[in-house]
Amino acid sequence: MILIAAGTKDITSKLANQVKQAYANGAVLNIRGSATKSFLANSDHDKNTAELITTREHQGIVNYEPGELVLTARSGTRLNDIQKILASKNQMLAFEPPAYGEQATLGGTIACALSGPRRPYTGSARDYVLGVHMINGRGEVMGFGGQVMKNVAGYDVSRLMTGAMGTLGLLLDISLKVLPAPETEKTLVQDLSPTDARKCMIKLARQYLPISAMSYTDRFLNIRLSGTQATVAASAEKIDGEFIHKHETFWHDIREQQHPFFKSDKALWRLSIPAASDWVDIETKLDGDCLIDWGGALVWLTSNETPEKVFAYAKTLGGHARLFRQGNSRSDSRIQPFSPGLLSWHKKIKHAFDPKGILNPGLMHKDV
Image 1 (cartoon, one colour):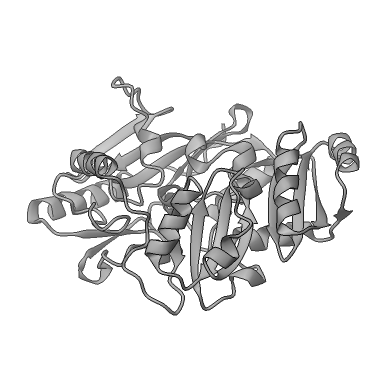
Image 2 (tube, rainbow, N blue to C red; image 1 turned 45 degrees about the horizontal axis):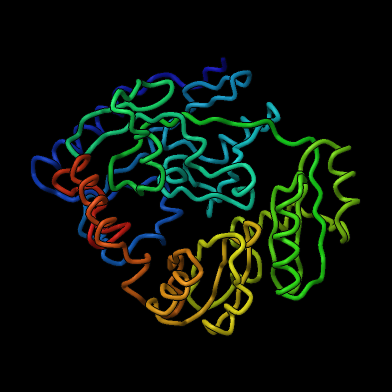
């Protein structure tokens, strides 16, 4: 076991007391790490009138056991620092999280539950969360999941915190499963029409190949292979295409939204759909430009269409949409509307963890 940071009872107590005081006064709190993902906040979340509570001082890796593939770190720990530690042991965060900034923290990464190009092939952020320590809306310190305490009720509460964007609690410590890094990675590129690219992605997904990413934009289908030297070489022979140089830069730019596609003044939409969905006509239906990721399961769309039209189209594809960046236009509707039943459950869960609604109210959804 690698023990890197000592305890921080004083910082935990400070954060818990701030939440307790806000609970007593009915004050609203704005939870913040490094704010690299603050652009995701719903417009109904008025952070200017909320009291700031920050995890920036709550830093450090609590323990790291390379042999057990487990790492526990505090929420304010920089994502880059964690990845450097893992790389020194030839390991990685398998969900390939985007940072969107050098100061990105682990807490913000898990709170937003964002995953990179590797997600369909190795799993999402939620799949790798083993346990958490957190502070609920009453200021109580609680622990759930692996390496913390058993949840006798049977609910995987630690994973419930993943993607909650701080609306259910302030994350303190997070335990993650990590994986060995692949021995080698290569990327093949093919020049294909959208129709042929979709067919190719579906065909490749049905084969036993070490694919770790598939992305399509500007008529080019990029296919990343990860594994041993022999496996990658043998698999490359079964797939048409040419190897691209500096492929790490390409996937970095897709993950961190630094690819030229993302340099648009139009609103950026994120559509999550079944991988086999027919997205070929989406650019004409929604008057925009697309970048396809996750082997067809994720569509990045730049368009100035109304939210209602984007939400409706995503629904016809069997998925849902989210306004990722506003662009030059402004919209109050950023997340696909919940069904009445789903909204009811969200409200019940919110009330159970945050009865007075003081933690990031309206940040994820205007009614929660």
